[in-house]
Length: 335
View (cartoon, rainbow, N blue to C red):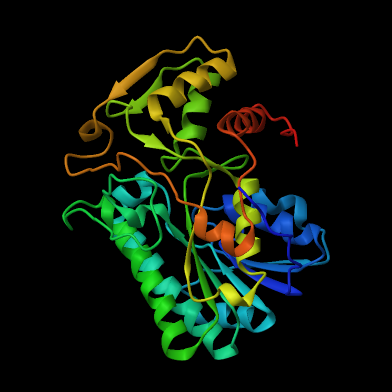
């Protein structure tokens, strides 16, 4: 896939909401490494200060421990920034299923606050969305202008997808009505060091089980497929989307390439960890509840983001798994 020359990042100071989270903390590393001043706002509900502890002595790094639902604190942070990367959200399948009220309120009200504060100060905003919005579509790869197929409202799984889709609608409404500079990234299964399996993230969860010699628990028949993206690649994509004002006002898929079933993924993790663990299949109704639905396939079309920014993922599923294993073993992942 052809790529364009890397653009220079145009902002001196950036606010990252949810900056102590998995992806947010890697964004901090990336931007600080380029000499950008970074402030994060995070209530540490799903993020961890450990993710950014190594940055605390950096003179270009500031931390505000607060929720994006705190409008006053958020407004102060936005005021100090030149641009905003909005990563804060309620994430993870287990959290979504077990805490649907928190999921909906955090995503809807939080994004509304971020957009309102940024509009007042005329700050560009990148809104992180999710591949979940594609819902139950079967025809892959998913393209940004595809129709979306979501499940019934009685199924809590779709609360997250709907809330993030409304975030997209609100951001694009600001663009159309107010010419507010916004761009949306639909992230596809981003994985890597610092990600926790606590909220249902599949690769860190299965890797921890393999390293402990426990059965690898697969929900459903394991034939559902995903396309995984290394967090280092995802971060490059996110940075590229704020590097050119000509691409504002649009939605971009951001993910990896290749498709793997969860069953084959678990087998690969066992091989990479040299574990003697076996596969254990658990029906969705036992893992979550009887109203749970899963997406059978999830593959991004990256044509639009590649044409706009030159983004193309470099790291394979094998590299992703190796880096997660190294992190869980307490080692530094290789470059």
